[in-house]
Image 1 (cartoon, rainbow, N blue to C red):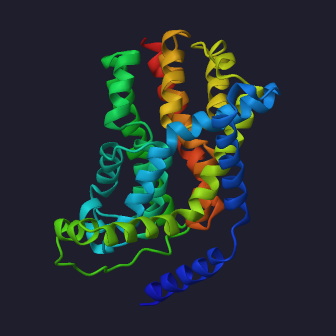
Image 2: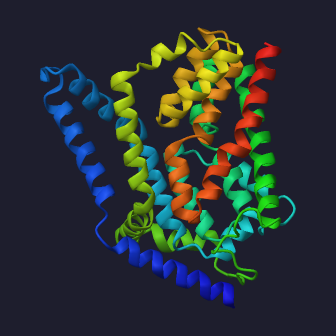
Length: 351
């Protein structure tokens, strides 16, 4: 009972905090909206090259990620109306055998981009999944979607695509179990949202969908709830868009591809590049494919896609926002980076 009381109290404090005006969210949204509209209306007439490049970058990034964000908001709003017991039934009880594996598989099957999956993952954590399940879900999902899988096959071929998917799944599952172990050993804090007994719910998933999607009123309620629940994460996504646009102004992604060879230095540059180039999964896929083909470094291409997940500042900030712990957020690269580097070198070695 105490844990339940603590959860509601925590959520109440969080709601009180987010009810005040969010300067970061609205400032970033204003900059993005103005930049997008100016590029759309003025385009090539913007004479200052750096400003033109910034506006164009905002335009391109938002065009690539809007659908993922919208889908993420929709799923977050829908999950608000799904009882925690149903989520637990689908992904497994935290700490149970196979729960991390189920979360990793769910991440692969849910066809969203990295920014949409981030919104869904944070909401699942609030629904009571374990930290290990959350990490497995996030690590396996950012580019392992059906749409991007077909794009990858067309860019780098079926064999490398299957290797990338299998390797990322292995890293996601191993990392998930490591995070659950760290929580069990009290090295990382427990989730304030977890409850020992979430009860049972007789309502079927089909009935929940019917209740929330079959009328304009219920669908509007889902979208409004999704926007409200996602606002604390959206501020970091918008900040990531602005930072990424600024990076594009000064550093062209093509400049990175010249140095992404299958060497230790190439791997180091890959890790640094993936960290500072904050784009949606659709944006990283072509560049990673270019590393595989032009730089002849498939392991570096894999590391580029995976490191974007592990060291992504948007994801780290969102984790801190949701878990209320910098320690958890910073353990994401600490746990995953060594695995990514090892797998990347192995792929390069056998290629």
